[in-house]
Image 1 (cartoon, helix red, strand yellow):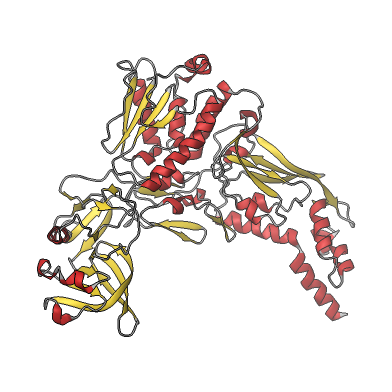
Image 2: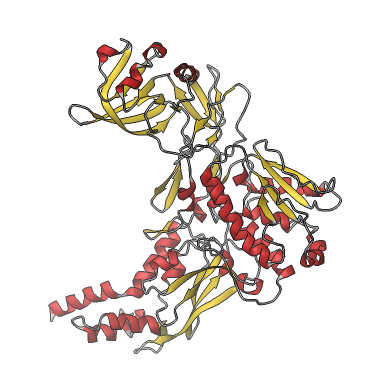
Length: 592
């Protein structure tokens, strides 16, 4: 009898899913610091959304130019070029205070997959501290000042002043680790196969003379600094919940390989970040953003450019990195305005739509020279997603484009009717998040051009705008989806007799965590734009009756969850006793 009771107790503890769900809820709420992270800019969602706690970040200005050392243009693997950030030399005796610091003593690592390549450069590198690494390289063949390592370079990590080189010794194949301040990679193929190389990494090709490389290395001795380009708000990051990976969009687009997954969050290495801002364009919540200028600053600049004219300009040209706007010859004088931004990816889709919601008819983007292919592909993807929306609202597919569409823009009838409604800027606070601005702009257009309930507009797979559907036959109302949603898009509630699952679609970023964590595989992602009436309110997903306690008659859990638990335990020893326990509320079950 004692053994039976112990077995029953173990089974009960292991199979009591409702209590485990409650524990998961408590852990998640503690991890979020009791912050229900809503991203809705709306008043008809009956929930108390609290402000996130501040995260220590460094907000710095644009890359300085004066007294700087401009790195050489390095070839990307795709053949395009992009200038790495300007490093400002810190004067002797002055501490670096404005950003990320690099300290280089000038130790140069010459690496190659062929010894002959390094031997050909011996006359160009006779000064300073040189470490030469190549298979078959012998000290007798090189200058006496060189430190020679007969090994095959395998892996490089780090940045100017703090490189680590892992090699395999030729004779023993043992791993060998060296450090250096500057890397000069003379391998046939770059050991760092990245779109954006870290400061201090130089790779030679046929167009670069060895003497030029030596001169560049000589300039990279001393203390340098650059801006910390990004800001990270961990509280709205949807990277991981309960051990399940959700959003990885920033990791997928970082050409500098500066972003790493660290548990439930991500980590950006500021020494590697080059400020391209592709991650901020990809991030659906705004957890990663540009430090300076902030999103709110860009919105204010845009409003100032628009307000400087008596009427909103026909076209807003957004130009980056000194690019020239690609003006259409058909545009009349004064019908366009120019907004300068540091990099084009910093001016994302939420600002594109904010411009349209401010009365601008077209937004034309002029990217900086040498825009990496990955960033361009991301821009094209975002443009395609937004084009589906603007076309459905009667604005046309090319209302937002890269460069001029080269045609005379005709006012759509819908625009003419609502143009007067867009004389006022969107009202947002300085700490407004990306999603709030996106929703505010979309809502203004939807309520003007798409009033009432309409069929949802399907968007491409991977779009950060959408909702979910729930298989009512499979869903047991365990509420795991609600307690694991990183953007508070799903909520679970109970009244006296029923349990209800609801969705706030404007919050949903399509991260897929609810789908991955659903134990019944009952959730399907739906990338789409729902009507304003559906998108900005709580919509029902499922509703079931609550089971009543066999002892006291009080409601205690959804009937579907209770039935599911009993069915899963039907083949367990002592199932009848366990079922009797489950059919009681927690108070009666524990004799309270």
